[in-house]
Amino acid sequence: MIGGLIASACALVAATAVGLGWKARNGRVRTAAADGAQPVSWLTQADLGAALGSRATLVQFSSAFCAPCRATRQVLGEVAGIVEGVAHVEIDAESRLDLIRRLDVKRTPTTLVLGPDGQITHRASGQPRKADVIAALGA
View 1 (cartoon, rainbow, N blue to C red):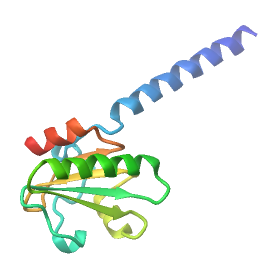
View 2 (view 1 turned 45 degrees about the vertical axis):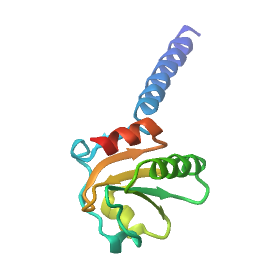
View 3 (view 1 turned 180 degrees about the horizontal axis):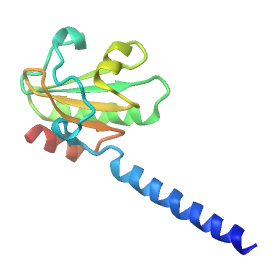
C-alpha cells in the first residue's frame, strides 16, 4: 500500500514538473540564434507565396483543426495592423510539408519573425503573446 502511494506521488511530481516546463516554453518568442535546431535561416518571397514586409514579416504555420492557431492569427494580424511595414503570412502546414521539414517545425502554431531581407530572426512554438511579438520586432 505504501509503495503504491510513493509511486503515485512520484508520478504526480514528475507530471507536474513536465507540465510546468512545457507551459514555460509554450509561445515563448526566442531568437533564431538560440534555436540550434533551425537548419534554414532565410525565406524568400517564392517560399512564402507572398511579398515580404518592408520592416518585417510574421510567418505563421497553422493547421485546420488547431484552436491556438486561430488566436495566433488574430494576435499576429493585430500586430501587423499596428506596426507599419509588417506583413503577416499564414501558411497551411499540411500543404507546405517542404517548408515544415526545412524549418524543423514540430507543431502548430509556429511563428517565425523575418527581417526585411527574409532572414529568420525570432521563432515561437505555440501561441505567442502580443507584447512578445512586438518586442521581437523592435529587437
